[in-house]
Length: 440
Ligand code: 9WN
Image (cartoon, rainbow, N blue to C red):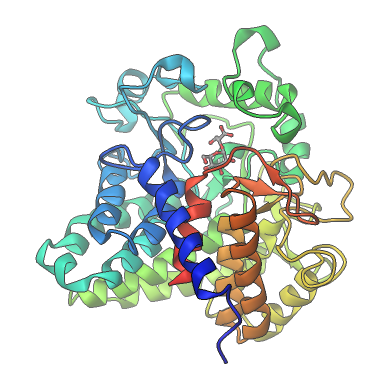
């Protein structure tokens, strides 16, 4: 049965307001996550944006993804930021003069003609490309959209499952907390504690000009982020032949890779090519995820520190994201739902949106970024996960909560999971994008 949604008028107003956010944040070739805090193109943001934008303009959604792929490096990596040359360097830190992709990154295959960061973000792109194609298959076929994006997406997955398999068990590893998209998750506290922070005076945080410092990562976190990025850059962004200080297998990152690998299978099929290699890789990755990161006692997937070979005990929402996987054992899916609705994440009891971190965890903080607040893209993914495993009542409730909280918070970047209070910036692109998708 259809879930109750806001009345038609509310629905229409919410949809119009969400559309306005995406129109305002469009730069002509792509969308910024926020005109103030994040004035460039971000990798996984663009994938979520394209998923929402396809309901407004499939043509813009295709463009969004193609602009991002236009900044892909020759080694297959899709950089986490593509810088807009028209924006001043002072507007965001770290800026192009920190990353130096077009000079230092050349040996690793960075483009010469534009500036990017040198690290990556979660691979939501093939999933987004497939969804964008399906929203307007006629024009997409005429424009050969899938033919054009497929080689880049395949190279991206080759990079992640090849050079980034630092653990040697088939999973992609990340080299920086920014690569997980969940920058200051408490899961990274322990591996980060071994990283010598860059001195406080050696960089200037632009983010603090736009937001409340208590909603953002700390200066100590930033010192370590800068130090890790500097090390990677000073090694020419090489993955091999150098020691990395932070190497982590993240279940959410890998679950998105698997979802995107299934999407590559569907894309191959659509193009009359062999889908089986993608399906079998998705299955192999699912098996590796189960073997390496599932924790029966914790009732969710845990991150793994590849350097020490140990599981990181904090319970983060990243460990619930594999719920999306179609070939996850049903027993595991049921355990994840129990964890999500139990005291650690409180869904349906103390929270209507899934928080980013354990409500009972040692580091829970209801307003600080990825240490507790609920994020809209993550709840959109979990809504799909619940539906995937037949939990349509819970999925409907999450959908309704996303719509309510996004509308009431002016499309906040994230919200206090217990009160819905807006945190971070507002008019945030992926919040508007997932609203458009859930309304359609
Ligand atoms: C660093 C753009 C990005 C998101 C990340 C979120 C935040 C950047 C920052 O903003 O990270 O990449 O400056 O804090 O953590 O998930 O992609 O919205």
